[in-house]
Length: 293
Ligand code: MEV
Image (tube, rainbow, N blue to C red; front, side, top):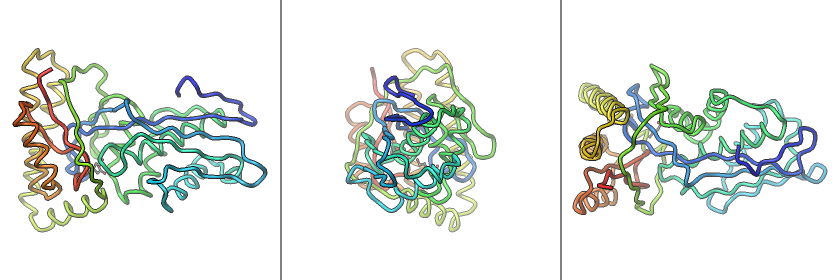
């Protein structure tokens, strides 16, 4: 919880919860099919949800214009229900402020879900473990994305780098050295659900090849994880760059890159980056590059 949270278990005048954003270093999409992904918290941007006592029976949901959708309301109802608070749904006004670009692969929905759950937990003075928060946030993620892997809610709940695998669970990476990374946006948003559906279709049409791609993705994630945990010196960025390039080729092959993303990746490489890839679901959103510090 952020320092400006206040709590009064009986009647909170105002409490808030925070959810950071995330970056998938490697393994997106293949994580949906059982391969591990390596994700990092991104705490320079995030979502803050503030709960304020509502006038009798007249609660309001205040959302940023771009986030207004039926799903946002459904999410609030669901979060109250998950915490057994449906009968108190109209006790609070819910205000949402976010600096996470929507639909651009930085985990805006999980950031919102975690912020909301933390605010509610604070309001009723019921501390939740990272594991509980992640499980609850996964339920909220399903409203936005159908059947997500769970990597986004996990890294945002724990707020440390994680290796996430639906089959093998999570590995929290407490001691890592990161190369210098930069993010750049195409400025366009994409639908995670559409991108995941596209990859599923690709898998159906190319079953054997897809299995090989999953194996490659797994090997990339494992290599990146050991790189981050080894004091590798100045060559770490160069090594990481090769893995990012490789990862981008896999994502191109399954059809989730775009001309704009490929253009950003090429621009980064031509400007001297060690390697670059799209990050997140693709179909727009951000490019991630490893650079010389
Ligand atoms: C989205 O942040 C990551 C994807 O792998 C989808 C998922 O893991 O559910 C594209």
